Image (cartoon, rainbow, N blue to C red; front, side):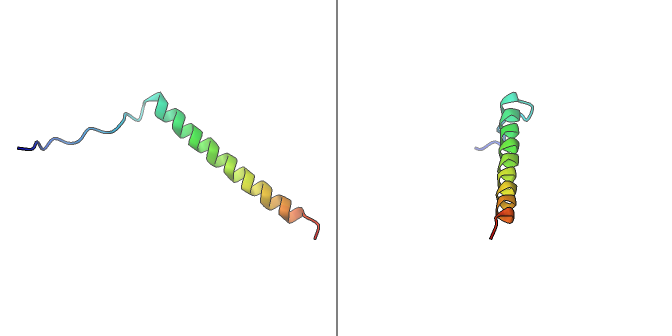
Length: 48
């Protein structure tokens, strides 16, 4: 017979490892956006 208990959450959101991973993803996203903006600026300033 199966139990009807609610499943446990996979991880506690207050754990420092998850905060570090989230911070790394945010920084990586910002770096990617900065790179894209820099490429657009470079191409826009390119003498044709």
